[in-house]
Length: 325
Image (cartoon, rainbow, N blue to C red; front, side, top):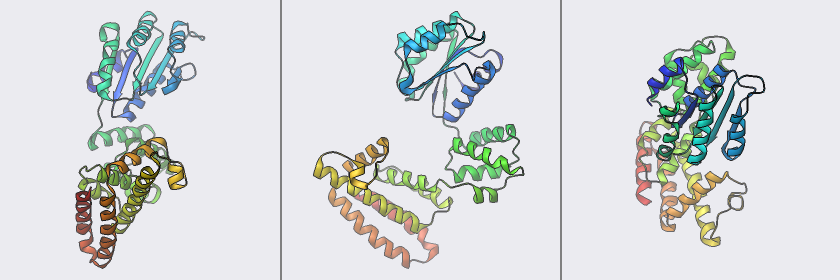
């Protein structure tokens, strides 16, 4: 279903069984909250997230009458598919009782979500909605709506600046709007620069991952410079990142496994540990040596280059780095 069509039926007769998936988690969270509000079930709903999911528990909840004569709202959020037989049973239970609602927020890939859609057929009184990542205009419209709801005065250009500072992360932007509303005055771009912590370090990490994965990097470098990062800080972050990849690479060659605590002295979250291990596996020892030597040369050259030419030099550095990988 297209989002505009869903918006129409949501205001008229909201489907009582819905599958949500896609790249816009912020908007999905808004829709889930809308259901919580219209059913007035914040205190009585059952939320089963990831490994909390139990078919027997979900089935039991939808099979019983509400303790207070109200609504039974079941929300399931997970990245694994629910078996079709179980999904069909839960949707069927919703169809049998007008006081039942079932919302499934599937966080896996859109490709895997296709097999789930049959269980949420409109013929069964259910439906599904895929939400795509919003573009800048759509993101700002969502933030304008958010600002209006919380009584925050902020113009289009300040919201655009907030999106830039937070690397277009709409969920982070929405959280910052809640904090900025405390000021009780109109919020400007200067207020954002003064009060909002930039996500430039996260964008730098993204740049370096893209570098090692041999993905296009020009746009990310441009965004970092727009966020206020200078050429020297980007080069230092690159040297630090390459050193970490080297440590992972050497540890794996010596031991045949990965342990970030043994390598770095502290334990990384599992997904980040695996990501850096995979990057380290891709690169060969001679390439790492060439990168180290080149970065040292470029550090000296960057320090002796006029400021107006440093940005151009930085682009050239990263293009050359990818040629080593």
